[in-house]
Image (cartoon, rainbow, N blue to C red; front, top):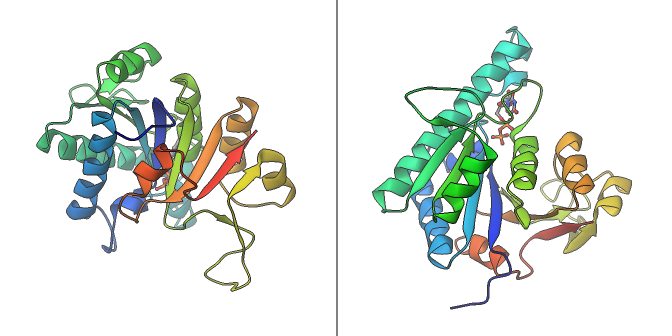
Length: 238
Ligand code: UDP
């Protein structure tokens, strides 16, 4: 078995990561592949916390641009993350990987509420813990929830799964001279105004000296390489 760089990780999946080639919602095949890859890490002894976004269903800002009250829109966005989390939990159950959804908003009868102790107990029992409903508050993002939960559970790294294989000097889709960074300090990323995450999330992780690795999870096996500490994507470090 390969040497793993981390014992406990927090994986942030955007809602779009579940969408695959669909225009909305969840692609069941993509969902199952993600569940399989995470299960393989658990079998190697890694404790895995997951935060899922909701952008494949609703985003508060988009709804408010269309005229809805922003707080209501954000509540809908957070509920979208609950749906994604339940779908991922179901995908784990189908492959006999124990998993538990813990919600920042109380939703009795559907999933348990978040507590740090409950999360750590479940992780120590080898369950994947899926944190849903973001931070539970409007005007935040699930990137902030990922950094918050990553700090609370003392994850050794926050893995941000995207559709791009790291952080670039410019948007690689628009600028062919864009250069990919293998490593960046928080200061370098801020000085260069590189958009890794929203600033609330980024500064929270920086203040708590967490490493963040940005990588492309659409590539099969990329998650395992990131956990093996291989130079997958871009590492942002204190
Ligand atoms: N959201 C929120 N508070 C949070 C996290 C999320 O209000 O703490 C809402 C917000 O409307 C956001 C939506 O949930 O747009 C979905 O989250 P996000 O946009 O972060 O999802 P992703 O882009 O990762 O799919």
